[in-house]
Image (cartoon, rainbow, N blue to C red):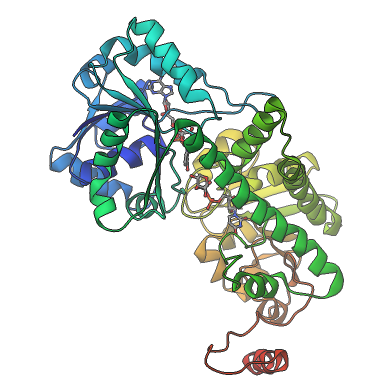
Length: 460
Ligand code: NAD
Ligand code: UDX
């Protein structure tokens, strides 16, 4: 099928490259000329594992093209995906200006019967508004609107797109649903569930899914604070509750709070839409406040331990999570800003995100390795869960440092190994120094005392 994609960001590019590799003829357009020029020259403007290879493959087999204008790619497309940004407005609600601009631009060029597919994350009701908007511009209703929310995560975008838990498609007419179903036919043939529903349901599913996942993270972070006061270990609690099939173990890792381009803005948008509809989402409202507060609290935790008059902190990790260069709403940026405001010198390291971070935190000193960042530092703070930080040579790290505080806001590091390297370890929710709960094969009868004995054995 001939498909046009408007917006060549994380979602537009991943969608375009994957649909091309699934056998469709895809053309991608973006309003940003610099971005288009880079793509035309074969360079990706973002880092996403595996995307460069998939991009080259799709370009080589001729199924993926870049277009400099909408009038080149829209007229013969059976489906036009809108994958532009939907940032938050001041009150949290979704700013749909990019979507409206894209809709205006494509309206005159749509072929009769084409389906406009909203891939961007939007509040319930947006699809219908866009339909009116396009019809006004076009002076005709000879097109359809569909909603196909995207659930991919940065860092694992390709796999999430090609092997999703489900695909959600919303449309109000059968022909549009048919087009959407045909696009994903090869994934459905591999057993991926495809949920056909209304546009409103599809829009709401996306926001509710992100709000629920964010609530899981918010919950475990609150439990982490609790654990610290009562000598418990949140990693063991997460394991213990996550093994309950009704709860599930995903999104139960305590940390510095959720960040990124989606959870913070999508929870705010969901809450704003609930308020506007007269159905306030109290749990989500509280979650948003607690998540913002958490980053301030963790920054203050670091400040409290720094006694030197001109303190230096080594910050390891700047992206909002590992395997991406994206720093949008990254807890590292928020915490970094607070530390800088306290007059702390920041020496930073990140495998991918230093260039992006330098654009927003101009006083940081970028270092080539974590050890270089630790040179002369009073404290080292691990904020992003890059695998390299889990494998740090702690003795080498300690030798570089002036002080001994190691803040591990992702619980990556073994507290006992840190102690053996003369570091003062501060994890999150690790009130007990016992190693993580040992996993006993399910065929063996297990009692709590067995697990503690195994944990002790693992320590010796
Ligand atoms: P992004 O900022 O990386 O990319 C958006 C792109 O759209 C930019 O390149 C911008 O230049 C382009 N654009 C804006 N207006 C345009 C116009 N009128 N015509 C052509 N191009 C235009 O954003 P993203 O992270 O890819 O997110 C896109 C949407 O997908 C958002 O609604 C987001 O909430 C949603 N989403 C994002 C993710 C994610 O992990 N990033 C996952 C699921 C859903
Ligand atoms: C998220 C959604 O997962 C995805 O479905 C949606 O399409 C886009 O938004 P993404 O932002 O790429 O994806 O990353 P995700 O892995 O969900 O992490 C979001 C934030 O939560 C990160 O800051 C991450 O570090 C944090 N997180 C995640 C935790 O703190 N603990 C967890 O257990 C999981």
